[in-house]
Length: 582
Image (tube, rainbow, N blue to C red; front, side, top):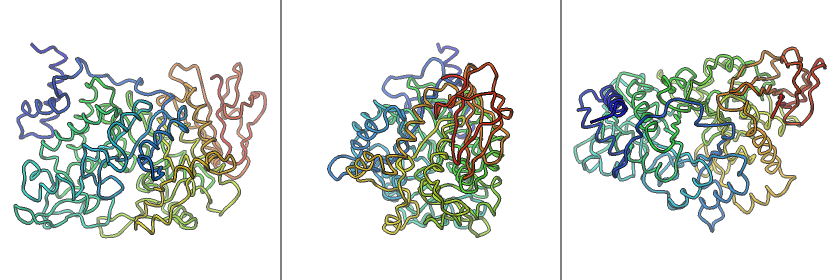
């Protein structure tokens, strides 16, 4: 006889199945799903985890990296990465997102040819296992598409079951005018199969063929893949390009109800897993669309805070945080059991779509002009009317902060550190791309060699050379890594920086971006002030509302704060974390 808890699990699962696959027997599919996610006699928890703030703490911070960002020509790249993490990142971050580490054919790993194997050029599963023993590990579930040269698609071309029904087919006569895409290449690709001529859907490129989730066997197979990842020490699953999962001709084919229902189904399985699994959705879209992936505390545990990169960069270039502040004031606190993932730099470019409706067109144009001045690039996306619009800026974030709208100055280092300190200060979990931590310059040589704009921010370091630079305290790489590491170590000790601690955006001079954070138990307050300008700025004590009978000091400088003084002074690009206790 089933317990009430088991009945609840079954009811919720069959309800989701009915929403996604109304014509499929929900009992049969439910059994397939449970067997995929809990194989070999394992079973769900008796009760699913309830939403709470206990999945993360102020100690959590992530490093984002490719498995081969560090090479030496002799050792496995994953072993070198592990050595780097232990040598340079222990106590600085406690998690690492290794970008797709599977066999692939293009897009630097995002055209996966085998979801069950580790790319042998990087290492093998035991190498992944070792990293997961020392750090929380995030993997990519590239579930929208697969490589055109992988086993799945080759089997589809040959008409072999079950893969003959794994890929999304459409007709050139279908109404596809409203389809939203991040690329300008043709959406459909004509292919010859054992069953005749077909046109397959390609959201990203013709080497990345979209899967057909209308076929429930596709979903079940990905649940088996998630289980494989979890069994190998993965604790954070990143749902790559999930917004495009469900397609329908005559629609935008983005954020469709079935897509959200699939995310809810995966979330429910994670909540019932014995292992702690955090689900992160990757949706590089405007604010309201991005926030929708929290659902009603029943979809993603975490979402990327995609507007941050362009808005922080604009503040640094313009010397004004007015648009960053305006956006931040309108951001809701994450729901119970949910968190933002904050970042400025990633393996992709600095997305401009999330800035739509926030940054005026003329401000975006100034950013693009400035980026071009420093040698950066711009990638475009196709519009439904046949036109194009900026999709992302391609540059390392360190190089992007090298110049303001007024030109170059002597504040490059301070401006960059300020930009990253903002990420550390905000509600949510901070994440840092390895090339931001290392102050990597733009790699224009790789752009020319590979013919891809994003290669500018995907440098591969020679490990002996990198270590020599990091051991040299005069190098920009050592100085940036040391400064960021020091601040992250300080941050990890502050309960007011818990990802869900209270946050209030302070109404200050536009040259200063300030937030008040208060710990969940209300014992600690931090006033995080960031001067985004090249000018010295005074902030009034009255504007900060410092309590008289508390002892206040700056966590970053150690300087005591006298509440009887009229102002707190911020030097150009200076940051202050003013608190009443550690």
